[in-house]
Amino acid sequence: MNPQNFNPVAEVDFAFYIIFGVSIVMLLGISATALWFVYRYHHTRNPKAEDISGNLLAEVVWIVIPSLIVMALFYYGWAGYKALRTVPDNAMNVKVTARMWSWVFEYDNGKRSSVLYVPKDKPVKLLMTSADVIHSLYIPAYRIKMDTVPRMETYAWFNPDAEGSYDIFCAEYCGLKHANMITTVEVMPPDEFNKWYNGKSKSAGAGKALALLENYGCLSCHSTDGSKNTGPTFSNLYGKKQVVELPDGTKKQVVVDEPYLKRAILNPQTEVPEGFTPAMMPYKDAISDEDLKTILQWFMHGNEVSLDAGRELMM
Ligand code: CUA
Image (cartoon, rainbow, N blue to C red; front, side, top):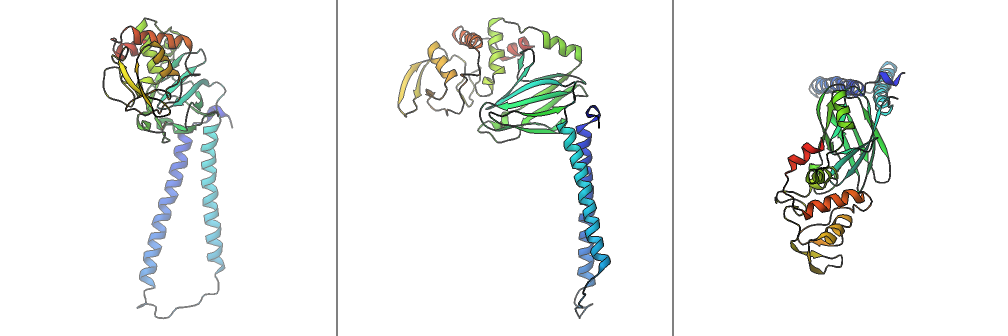
């Protein structure tokens, strides 16, 4: 079989409909037989029970037919599984890192994004891992769902054969904001994708910092407009006095300055702002020095640029 001809969506759907169809026939057949027996063998119609020592035909039928059905179900299930696990040679690789509670997609040229941009008609292979706990990448439109596991690489692939926007969910309960761990696959015309792929991220200070905060997933827990969320809002955070709790339970007051922000980003579990839960894993190995500097600059020099402006600059 040529893997280029595999169409996982069609194979998976076919296996589903075969199993569904067989189940419906069985449900109706067994229910009708049971009802017929209730009527036919009611004690008023059959006052005497009868002993049957054996029936060769019945035994052959109920062994052979279910065996054939089970083998057929296995065959179609196996064909669907093969299609899902056999990646075409011309697939484009995208590295996926899941973390509480966002997705980061990284391309061969080092470009990162929190949305999965792909060109139409080019198979995509997702090489997946997790920075903290087990998550699961689920794209219903492409019939793929695969766990992302810390210190392990898993994979999945799909063929984006129609332009559009398709949901990505986390399908493994991973903590407080599991339900918010959603993003999309954006299937674009190839030339539009190439423009995005080869485009330099504009580095106008605030926009770049916001794009980084978005791409690193910070904004799924921290707002930039003062609204309440799982983590403290970034709005007017710099210079604020704040009570933090140390790992031994003691409290102290700190000023949110550059050294504190650096500690809070790299090691968020050591000085936790009062009233918040230290759910995040450290960003120590995940964030580059240059990106950290850009983000700290943004905190220091005001964060007046809106998130939408940051999104535009990311494109
Ligand atoms: Cu990640 Cu649920």
